[in-house]
Length: 75
Image 1: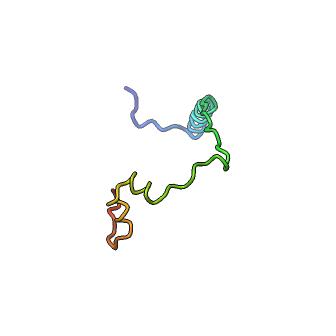
Image 2: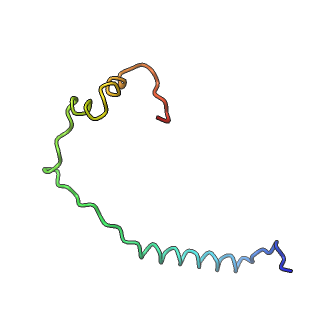
Image 3: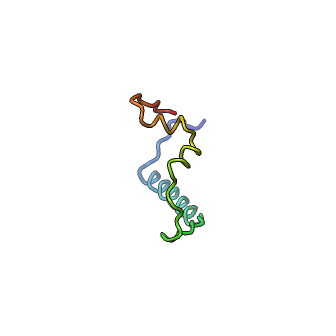
């Protein structure tokens, strides 16, 4: 029966760690991410007006930003 409390030697642990690091590095090199196109500053949309923000978030949510009550952290 195999001993369940087997501990690696320092050399075995280092070899195992190097193998895991090499495998992770190989996977990371193979991942290709598409880069987002950078929009030039002169083509950025104008900032939203207060009316547009109210329309998007709702007038009540917009109005609550100035209240003295602490908002729920998880909401």
